[in-house]
Image (cartoon, rainbow, N blue to C red; front, side, top):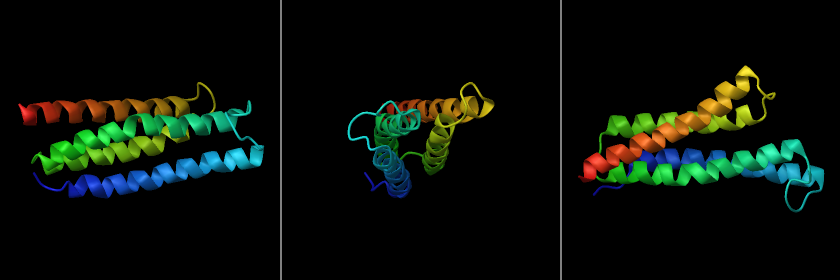
Length: 132
């Protein structure tokens, strides 16, 4: 088993994105004087869900890719999956703040989550094939 260097690099980038999303939520709470929940503020609710969605999908996806890489998986697959994951996680919050039912909402929010789920699924399948 090797140290998953490529995954570690992209995990650091994703960590910075997550820190940005966290700051976004904190800023929304401070400006809206909201200690708990979303205070009925639509923008804060969207920020909280962008942050939460990241937290729900990225850790497992990174773990799957890291295990695949550490097990000697294809460097091209690893890098490709991670690049798509980073792009997807940037697109998702952009789409969360797009006007409802707009093309940008569907392309960014929908595309971001679909790409994230696709990366997670491909990584899981590659890991299963590698481990079999």
